[in-house]
Image (cartoon, rainbow, N blue to C red; front, side):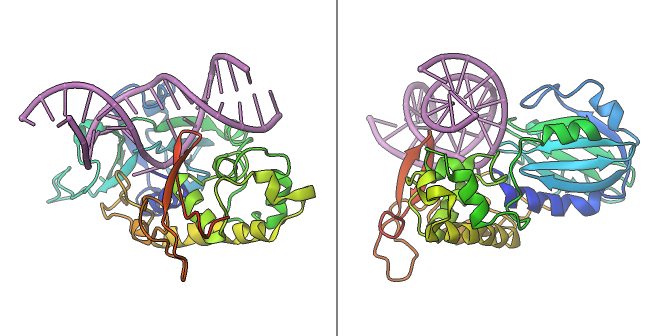
Length: 290
DNA sequence: AGCTCGACCTGCACGC
DNA sequence: TGCGTGCAGGTCGAGC
C-alpha cells in the first residue's frame, strides 16, 4: 500500500490516539512480520508514554519516553485501525472496509485509556523494531531527503542524478535519494512533469545542471504528494485511514492504473500505456511524456 | 559502487 | 465450480 502520503495519513490518524498517551500493554499475535520482533519487544514498550509520532521516509517513529523509538513500516499491505474503548463499544465491531480479516491482526497496542490500536498486515511485509535514539540515527543514515522539506530542489536533483545511468523511474524509486516515493507517485509526478519514465536520469542533469524538465520534476513531486495527503492517500487494496475511511486520491490518478484510458492532459490525444521497468508496472502517456 | 533481479507473503481478478 | 497464472502502494540480499 503505502507510500509517503499513505504513511502520513496514518500518522495523522494515530497521533491523537497515541501522543501523550501511555501504552499499557502490547499483544503480539505472532513472532514476526517481515523480520522477527526484537527480543522482549512487548515488555520493553509496556508502560511507556508516547512523546511524539513522527514520519521518516515510509517509516513511522513513535518516540517513547526513556529514549526508545518504536519504528514501524507498513510494507505493502499494512494498516492501523483505532478501536475506541469504553462502555458500549464492542471491540472489533468498528467498520473497517479493508483488512477486515482479524486473522491478520498481528499487533495490538492497548492504551491506558482503553483505546486499542490494531496493526493488520495480510502480506506481512511490514516491520516493527525498537531502537535507542543512537541506533535510530544510524538506521536512517542512508535514507534520502524528505521531499516535502524544501531540500528537494532542481539543483539537488541534478547533483544526485548526474551519474545515474538508470531510468528516471528507477532513480526516483531509490529511497537513498528521495525518501517516500513509490510506484504510484513516481508515475504521477513524471506525468505532471511531462517526462518519459524511460529517460536516463543523468540525461536530465548534463554537467550536473538541471534541465527545464528536471525543474518541472522538482516542482511536480511535492505538488503530487501534498495533493495526495490532502485526499487521505490512495486506497487501492489495503490502505484505509485509522478510522476506517478510505483515501480518495485514487480518483485523481492521471496515469497510474489507467492503462488504455485517455491521457488527462488538456489537448493531448495520447492513451495511457503500461510497461514494466525493473519488474514493476509503469504507467505513462507516450505522447506528452518525452 | 550501481544496477537488476528474485524472494519474501497473501489475496484477488482473470481465463480456461 | 475450480484451478492455474499473474499481479499488487516495498525492501533486501545476491550476483553481475
